[in-house]
Amino acid sequence: MGELTIGAFARASRLSPKALRLYDELGLLAPARVDGTTGYRYYVEAQLPRARLVAWLRRVGMPLARIGEVCDLYETDPPAAGLVIGAYWARVETETAARRDLVTFLVDQLSGNPAGKGVDEMSEMRMRYAAGTDRGMVRPVNQDTAYAGSRLLAVADGFGDDGARASGAAVDALVALEESVRGADVLNGLADAVDRVNRSNREGSSGDSGESGTTLTAMLWTGSRLALVHVGDTRAYLLRGGEVSRITHDHTLVQSMIDAGGLTAEEATSHPQRALLLRALDGSADHARPDLRLHDVVPGDRYLLCSDGLFTVVGPDDIRRVLTTAAEPADAVSELIALALAGGGPDNVACAVADAVTV
Image (cartoon, rainbow, N blue to C red; front, side):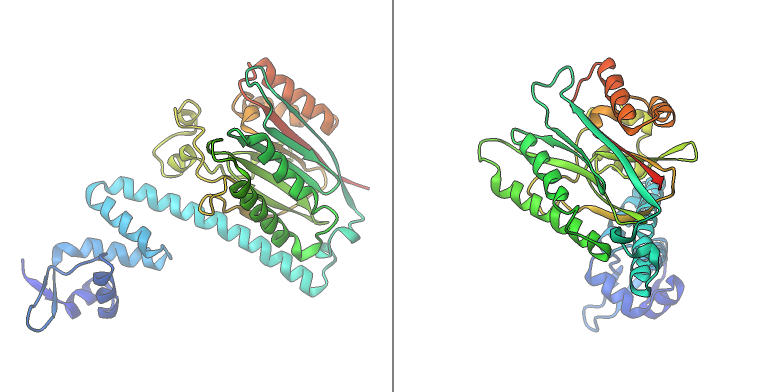
């Protein structure tokens, strides 16, 4: 098979010579041969599929480090590489939607749109709310914390010897924002609070207590939208128009396997590592990055935040039935916890429910 000069290979692969030199330096696409005297790079036709894949992935904005992983996988298992690309793009779309919501919110704030003016001017909607927790039937202590107030819903699921303290501190940090954060500052306030909680977990855990921390899912009412902060595998659900949808994405190993197509949702429920968290407020800066987004609220919406002690025991059909039929948030909370206990209560249970109602 004949060699191609860098110029000929660039034309065939639709990559510039400059890009090819960069990808050589990064180890993404090494030439077949480099002339020892002139330093000229030479390629072969067999390298074209990898080069074209690099070009396509760069066009969709995939980071170079991820491109290297996909290309290596492509050479041994092309279908698996396709699943990884699909999972990457699904994540991009989720993050883009969150940024779009934020842009809309900021435009409202800066243009004087009443829909974005915050809690002081919310005259058409308010929240009805309730929260509850239970130790369950197996665990010796309750490490879950739940809170519901006029502006805030929050659920945290602690783990480790200091888990109860960690979950309580996480929710307390957000309760402090109910009266102090307004308008466009809401996402920054949530992010700062999460960062403070994570630093506290790093500094406050005793050396012999093992790894401790908490998950956290919370929604802070801004007047026309709910600002969502989410770390870990506590969840937020929305009942709208009779349909229940999950509006958070679990930060777990099994969820990453589902995203990559290597595991089905049904298989995940019995996977031996289903509780392994990829993100949590455990004192580690690498693991604590929260999802932050804004969610539009419609009158009649019902929101459920809950720990895994609920949704791993109570099936989606029962969750939908309770959210659809319970007259008041307190009724929904009581019935959901009762269902978790009737299912064996293998874990602590926490949930918070709120309705958006017109006044």
